[in-house]
Amino acid sequence: MTDKVSLFGNAIVGQSGGPTAAINASLAGVIRAAQSAAEIKHIYGMKNGVEGLINGIEPIDICLTETELKLLSSTPASALGSCRHKLPDTFESDEYKKLEEIFDRYNIKYFFYIGGNDSMDTVNKLSEYCEIKGREMMVIGVPKTIDNDLTATDHTPGYGSAAKYIAVTVQEVLRDCAVYTKPAVTIIEIMGRHAGWLAASAALPGSIAGIAPDYIYLPEKPFDKDIFLDDIRSALKYHPNVVVAVSEGIHDAEGNYIGAALHKGKDVFGNVSLSGAGKALELLVKDEIGCKVRSIEINLLQRCASHAASLTDISESERVGEAAVKAALNGETAKMMCFIRSNETEYSVDIVSRDITTIANQTKTVPDSYISAGNNNITEEGIKYMLPLIQGELPILWENGIPKHFTF
Image 1 (tube, helix red, strand yellow):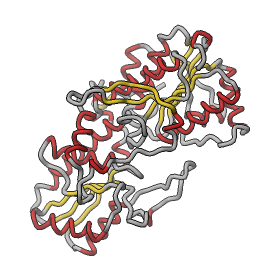
Image 2 (cartoon, helix red, strand yellow; image 1 turned 120 degrees about the vertical axis):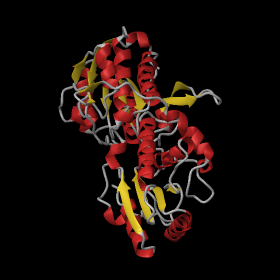
Image 3 (tube, rainbow, N blue to C red; image 1 turned 45 degrees about the vertical axis):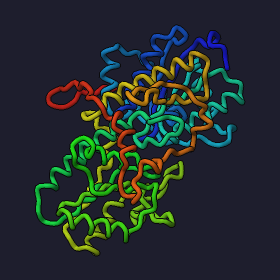
Image 4 (cartoon, rainbow, N blue to C red; image 1 turned 90 degrees about the vertical axis):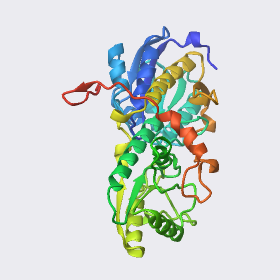
């Protein structure tokens, strides 16, 4: 650990991975805390993350008023731009040399990276590189992902708002479907490659409004087409409007994705591009049952719906950004900030830092206790976990009928 008194200089912050409704709130938290720190003279923003730095995009010098920070917090997506860039495994790569040149030129002593699983890989590698090279720079990861699949933290910034949007949308779909008497099946496909946290949130209207999908299928459990068809036939016996929610990553016992025919290759981290599970099941129901059927893919809409953001999510996202700066000023590095539930009866969280080496490239999945015995729904324990994360509504500044957004 480096003595914080010796680390007077500048800070740099970047955003990476998929955008969310809360990632800019974490950015606002980092900026707010950095601007008030005596050790930090300037706060710079990476344009398009580390990929932007490597490609020669000069960082911007950030200085925002409190009014601007509040607007930034309510603005969806990544205000600094994003990337999906994997740093090389070998530290002799020219990419690290290019990054060092930027750090030296701008006297960077504090590095903050806001992102998900792949972004924490970047934090891990850069932390190790600094240690090996003896470079005095605090490197801290700030969690972000609607997938809620980062380990070591109770939940991730961005998930609560995405879950809230899904719950609202599913409730509206259920209301729409309920007006008809002709037998019909509606399949809602929700993001979630290896972890079903997002699809699980489709169950929330059942706890709040008394209506929920008949079934919810997650990638944590093998998907059996025959059992699925039996579930649909069973539900149709009780009412004509069957609604099910599925994660995009549902797969059979052999690991074959249900929407495999529509794969579009892999990204630089080796992740398969998924889509088509809902459409595949739509065709299955049409062929095997023959009733009216349709599929809905929520897709990108669930990521950046700031008009339906969770106030809890946005507030915690600001806090975790501020906590990252405080941790770095205290001499911490190679860490990710994490939420820890601190009260079992009334929801609250503490924020702690944990070693990035135990987090990078790991995936947190939905526990068995949250999944029903039939592997086709969510338990009360799962509802209890999710419900506090969607609470509260964010004050939105509207301009000529649409929300006003911050841009650099």
